[in-house]
Length: 273
Image (cartoon, rainbow, N blue to C red; front, side, top):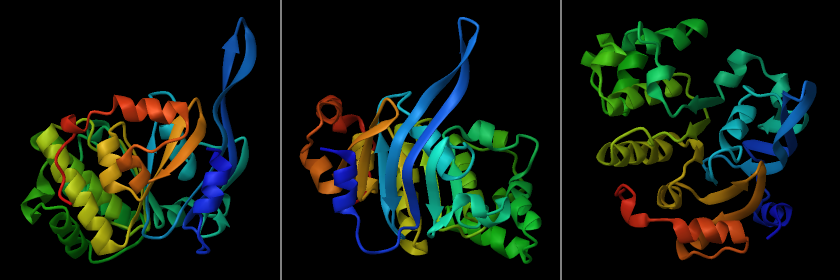
C-alpha cells in the first residue's frame, strides 16, 4: 500500500488539526572527518483531525519520536510543512504553540524537575501565560487525573511511577491544549499501572475532546486507543491502517505483516472497552 494513496483516500473533507506535508529531516554528522547529513525522516505526510487519535508504530530508530518533536517544533525539518489549524507551525510563538499542542514524554523522572513540588510544576505554565485562579485550576487538573489536592506539595521522588505520570498529564492539560503527543506514555510503568494510565487517557480524550498522536511498541494498545495507525520504517511511513484492519491483522506491506505476526496481545495490559 502506498503511503500517499492511503493517506489521501483516508482523509476526509474536514480541515485537519495537525497536518504534515512531505517532511524531510536530517541531522549533521561526521564520517571519516567529513561533514554529512544523516536522514531521519523522509517524505512524511499525515494528518490528525480534531478529536481523532493516530497511532505511530515501528521498531526503535524508525523516527517516531523525532516525528513527534517535529510536530511540536522541537525539531526543525529540512523541507516540508507542519500545519496546525491550517497555519504553519512557524507562524506561532512558543506561548501560542503550547496552547494548542503539548507533549507527554516516556520518562517522567526526567520530565519532572526533582526540585519542584507538584504545586510548582502545575503553577509554572499558568504563571508564564498570566492565567489566574491557579489553585482552582490545579485542584481541577489533579482531580481530572485521579489525584487529590493533598498531592500538590509532594515532590516527584515521593510519588510512584503512575502518580508521576498522572502529574505529567495534569501539567500537559493546564493550558487546555487541543492536541497531545504521547511518546510511549506507559512503557516505563508496571503492567497494571499501564492499564490505569491508558484508561485515564481514553477518558480524558472523551471528556475534553482531545486529539492524540500516540507512539507505542504495543499494537494491542494502539488498536484500543487509536482510530488509525501509521507504520514507520527507516524514517518513512510505509503503510497506514484503520483500527479495524489492525485488529483483524490485515496489512499489505511486508514490514507491517511482520510486526503483526510478532505482536503478543496476551502480554498487553487489559484496558476497558
